Amino acid sequence: MKDLIDYVEDPEKTTIRTKEQQDFFSVFSYVENPDKTAGKEYVTAINCLKETALRQMIATKKQYGKDDKYIAWHGYQSFRPDEIDPEECHALGVMLAKEMWGDRFQIVVTTHLDKDHLHNHFAFNSVSFKNGGKYNYSKKEQQRLRDCSDRLCRQYGYSVIQNPHKAPSRPVWLDEKSGKPTRYNIYRRDIEEAIATSRTIDQFKKHLIRKGYDVYLDGMHWKLKLHNFEHYTRFDTLDEEYTVLNIQNRIYDDYKQTAARAAVITFSPYIPEHIRSAYNPFDDFCRETHIYRLFLYYSYQLGFLPKERKYTPTSPYLLEDIRKMDEISAQTQYMGISNIDTLEDLYEDRKNIEIEMEYLNERRNKLRNMMRRASPEEKELLREDIRNITAKLAVQRKNLKLNKGIETRSQGIIDTMNLICENENKNLFQERNRSRERNYER
Image 1 (cartoon, rainbow, N blue to C red):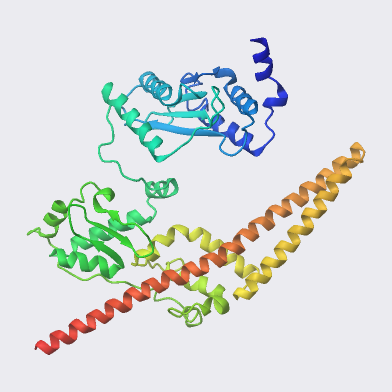
Image 2 (cartoon, rainbow, N blue to C red):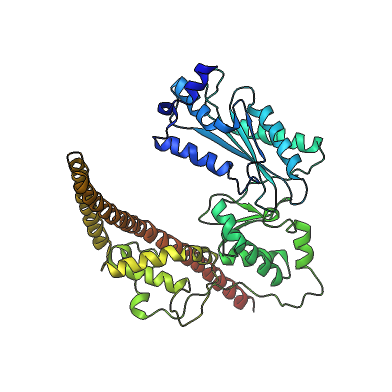
């Protein structure tokens, strides 16, 4: 036992030296945060001691020579608000962890109380203390975790998700909560608009197509998507009230006050002529010659410019990009400050940044080498010089990120505007044909 304790507590084996170990430490710092766990009251360790769990896990990795790549796994289990108390929540979490990983891995189970819904976190070593094998995560293992959790919840009388579906990413989820125009919020808004302005299912479908959607209204589950996304989104995952029957009832409502009307896509009326010419439909050459004005043009189309006028686009493609307005604004300002007008200017700016970064890195390395032979007084001066260089490098890294982001986004702007123009041209062509047919019939 003494040998084991000495091994586990050996500073040479437990000092955090690598990025992987720092990530390991960060995971456990979050999972065991006293502010979330009522002063660590709801923390349980399995196959290790709670007080030395991190050290023991690092020791297991060192023992089997597996301290790189995947270092730990982090899972969670959530409950409905006000459905369960902390003691029961934690007890269920410990049961789940033991059943899932308790025969091979060191685990820390914590219950977080900082949200309106109680939830358990599971942080466990990626390396088995039993035989040194690494945990293999897969879709089958993910399903096993869900099935095990659901079974325990049903056994003890707690609710489970009846119709699970893929959740949005966390950034999108946070934007949804804050009311920003995410793709899903835009889908809901356009579906509501189509319901309110349609008297038939055919009008409803045409309204959404006119906005730029691919629409599928066959079978039990209606769905839609924008052309720049691969997968469809089901109506009833956007809102459980968007069933086929509910939408049909709302469209055919005899007491509806709003008259049927077609969808309209608007463009900013405030774009100056010299900015308007920065974009030509289906012409990528404007990236090379007008990249700065292209960003200004897009800022007008998003309603960000001019500041003194209020304009909101109606195209779902433009509405979704309003979420990215802070990034687009920063990139546009960077081009203005750096006198970048064309793609060639952008590449020249990138080259200068990379040269400057290479010089600063070489200079910093020389100063670090000088510190080995410097006196204490000289070392303090050298440290100050190194700090200044590090600060300059941070600025250049930020500039390089902006520079590369501008190139990527410029093509995205072209693609988005091309999609909108293509949809507009197609619909205008169809409307002209329908108008000719009506005139011919008369």
